[in-house]
Length: 461
Image (cartoon, rainbow, N blue to C red; front, side, top):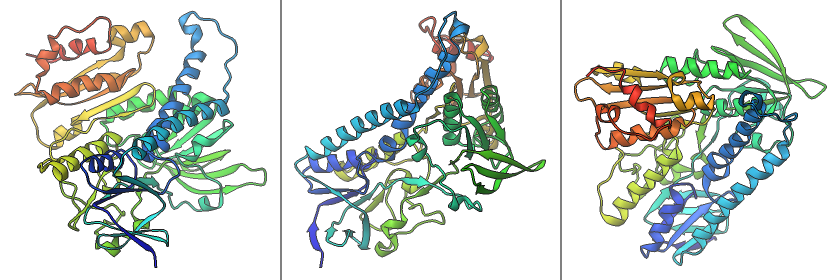
């Protein structure tokens, strides 16, 4: 029989909701256990997602700028890449962040870190391995997601890459095939093109980033094409097979029929699958949807009293900052008797290709579908002084505003520092600042945000 330990609270997963929530519970005096199956602490953001990818994106941008040095009147020698050194730098930063997260957990008196795979054995009962059982009336699930592996004939027979393993390569692939044209596929596709790979991105739908407005998707396509990335739209990989020399032959079905590409590596970037199956949610009576996500209400409560789900595992926007806001909602409600919910919260995000795409609020298509009275302001980056001075003029600024109230409904900033400029408009939205105030505001010159003046001057009134 396994040993049984009782806790005031159990948190499953050390991601951006789980870790701070476990610490808050412990600091409130509750005896808390936090369970992590990975050998590193911090969840997918620190270990496999934001931290390592943005570290490597930075290396790719340096390589890109070094290759453009002559455009700025700078003479350099031949540019080469040491991917093993890029990987070493990435690992060091991940270890630093993960180590800090572990120390933060270990210094809490009422918090116990348990490493292993958690699974429900009954409502309020969690087993870790065969030797340990935990009981609590409060259980918080923050187990995240993993890469979805598409059903491509032959894929299981080759050593394909995912968003985690691709960052462990120590040599630049000669030709990288990317299955998927979403955020992950675009970031890695451009990154490895800048590292020196030939890159082919295969996108099932007719557009990249299909949730964005069409003009945004088309501009992103233009940027990648200019960078030398091959993009095949309305296409699917129908089969892959390894040849006798270690290369992979991919058959790709598209609008013009079947085409073939012989590649050295295949990166799967076709969505994410929730890490709920290993939890055995049925043993606790937990509902899951057809894709495996754990449904919650606006207070992040599951269908089982005393069990909450936070972060990516619950479905919805899969962003680190949303996971952290989930923590704030649950902390306020559970520890302080609050009534916070997910209703009405803004969901900002950025796609860290180069230039960045920063997005918040409604797109033009969404405003139209909702029947709103709106106007659109759009400014190409070729009209932004700082972009011209930096010779970084790809992209545009776009904002959707309410015709009557002059409030900003949403924006898409595709340009250098796009995420930062987007955040300026998000702050205006949070404070109910009309676009007319930004149009007439005094911003430091020359900054990218200063051009918000010019953006909103394109609107009447």
